[in-house]
Every structure is written in structure tokens, then in C-alpha cells.
Image 1 (cartoon, rainbow, N blue to C red):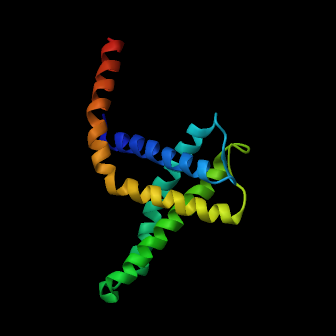
Image 2: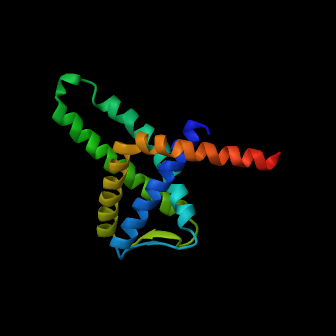
Length: 149
């Protein structure tokens, strides 16, 4: 299986778990049961598109390496939170009707923080998860190829 596709699918599952966890914790965050998969996919696509843009702006605005590691870490932390917030915002606007919604600013802040923690944890282990999923994906792809013959 294509490594990028596999990485995307593993990320979608991880982000889906993170979004579901946030929904279970926050009474003001709602994902319709039937539209949950679409919301997960929208969030994954959103964060995949937004993250490189935010990283570009980090590079532009943190030009000097002599600024110190602390300032870069602060910018990176803020960029991660902004990325998650924008991905949640885009997901809410792209999801049909009320299939994905966040009701108030406190919920927006908490949802952003919870999902950011989940994405940070995923970013720490994503390569290992993809490596573990690769043999299963390859077997599934081989099985589908055999069925087509």
C-alpha cells in the first residue's frame, strides 16, 4: 500500500479517536453518529492542509536561530494550537447541517486543547503506528487483488 495513503488512514483513525474523546468529555461539542466518519475525514484533510501553511509561517516569522530554543518552542506550541483550532473551524463549516458543531467559546478552547494534546501524542508515535499497520494493509491489499482476479 502507498505509504502516504497508509499514513493518512492511520492519522484519520487517530484523529477520529481524539475527536470522539473530546466529544465524550465536552457537552458543548457534538458529532452526529452517522456523520462521525465524515467529520473525522474532514478534520484529517483540514489539518493535513493547514499544518504545512502554519509551518511555513513559523519559518517566516522565526528567522533567527539565535532567538533561543524557548521562543521557538513557544511559537511551535502556539502554531499547533492554531492549526488544531483552524482545522476544527474548517471541519465545522464543511460538515453538513449540524453533524459537527461546537457550541460556545469555552468549548472551543477546551476542544482545541484536548484535540491538540491528542494530535501531539499521535505525532510522537505516528511512525511506529504506520509501521505496525503496514503489514495489515499489505495483506488487505493483496487479498483485494486476489479477489479481483
